[in-house]
Structure formats: structure tokens, C-alpha cells
Image (cartoon, rainbow over all chains, first blue to last red; front, side, top):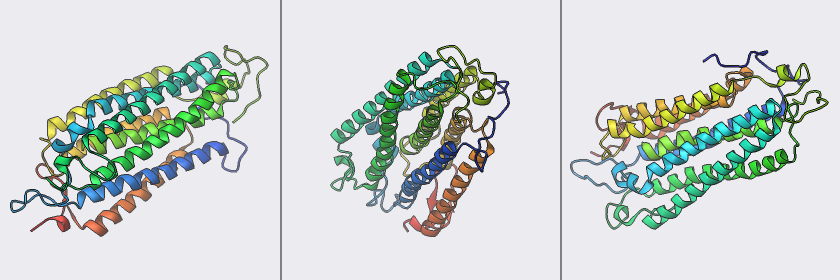
Length: 226
Length: 137
């Protein structure tokens, strides 16, 4: 795909020791630390799941076996979560369109696209909150499984619930932080504080928002589909 | 990254001769939307993969399912990183930083799995990835 602007490939070097804008470098360093953070959560989940007992002919339902997809996916509402994934992807488009707008000096479009991103972010959180309520109704919560999978029946591994809420909960908190920041950026954009020559905040926020989307892409696959 | 402020900056593009060249670099709007369509299609495909590969009553995902889903997820993640986060168009330093973070975490994953779980049985088609240490007799 060679669809890039026919301009000098990179911006003029910043007046820093690295030649890179300091704030942008700092954001990327922060995102690197976030990679470590979310990877720790995800890999803990993987290890816990991989070390849980497997069924054998002698014991087809060992204590602490991880719930099978058949047992859990009808509770997790994958179509709704897939829709949520799609909304987050659309919000990535809208935030990059906001950046594109301000890079071209179009303040009205900047405000419009930030508004769209804000609505999508709030919608994502709302759907996630709704899903949590429904899961709780089904009996799935931080420290318990639905009755049919609980200690009285199949006795599946409760860590499935714990890891599920740990991963999706922390991601949700990151989205919430992003929505709060977005609200501030939206108000500042509405006040006309961003210009074609001064919009670094929009770009840096965009990096954070895209990263949150990227993490969800991985989480959705590992938590809901595998 | 602040450049010289132009004299007028309303909705019209900046008239400063260097502003465009120094602040606007990266994909076009068309590229953004192409990537969006790819992401949407890949998401749809991803949802179908478990129904195509696995019956769903397995205790652990099969190797095929893991590979199929992770490849799809990584392609999507790569598209977001390369085009929306502008890694393809920005300084390579940012890419190297992310690669280093990923290598570090992969190393720790290897330590966690090899050290606690033991050698892995990678069964591509049937019962899926298991660890010899966790198998019952």
C-alpha cells in the first residue's frame, strides 16, 4: 500500500539529543511499559490455563479443569463483544481522522471526529458494563463461576473468572482513562486551542487510544475465542 | 513539535510554506479507510475460525485454532500499529522500542512456561497444547 503523503517522509528532527520529540518518545516508552503490563496479565492467564488439569478416561471431570468453550461462551455473549470490538476499531479510525483533520488545519472536522470517538468510547464502556451485569446475573464474577460449573457440580477452575475480569477490567479502566482524556481534548478542540502547527496532544492521545484498541484486539481473541 | 504559528489558521489549511511538509506525514485518508475495512473483515473472519476449526468441547484449544486466531489477531494488531500509530512512517526508533518490549516479554513467557510447566506437547490437530507436567496418569 503506497498511499502515503508525498512529502518528506519524516518530520524535521526535533531539537533534542535523540532527534525525536521528547513527549512523543515518552509516550512510546509508556506504551512499552503497557505492553509489559498487559502481557503479564495475558501470560498469567495462559500459564494458569495450560497448567489446569486435563480430562482423562479415568476422570473426565477433574477438579479445577478449565471451563470448555461450550460451557462458557454462551455466557460470554461473543456477538455483543464482537460488536464492541468493531466499535473500538471504528473509534481508532475516528481518532486518526481527527489527527488528519487538524494536520490539514480543519478545526471543525477535528472537533467532529473527536466527538465521534468520544461517543464510541462511551458506548464501548457502556456495553462492557452491561456485559458485566449480565455475567453477574449468570453467576460469573471475580471469585465465582456459574452454579453449573461451580464446586457443587462440575467444579471447574474459578481462576477462569478471576483472570477474565482482571484482563477485561484493567483494559476497561484504560478505556475509561482514555475517555476522560478525550473529553478534555474535545473541549479544548471546541475552544479552538489546537491548530495545524500545534496539535501534539492530539497525536499523542491518538497513540494511547490506538494502543488500547490494539490490546483489545489481542484480548478479545485470547479471552473470548480461544 | 510546535512549528512557527501561521498568521491565520481557521478551517483552511495553513499557508506557512514549511508547515505541511514538517507536520503532515503518513498515510492518506484513503489508506486509513482501507485499513479499517481490512480490520472489519478480519474481525468477521476471526469470529468464524473457532466454528470452522474446533468443536468447542475441548479442554484446551487445538494448535490449529491457536495459530489461526493468533495470526489473525497479530495481523490486525500490526495494521493498527503500522498505519494508525504511524510506525510505518515515523522514526524506526519507536518500532525498535516496541520490538524490544515484545522480546523481553516473550523471554519471560518462555521462562514461565518452560520453568513452571515443563516441555510442551504441541498437538496440532486433536487435544491441543498440553504440558507433560500437568497431565494426569
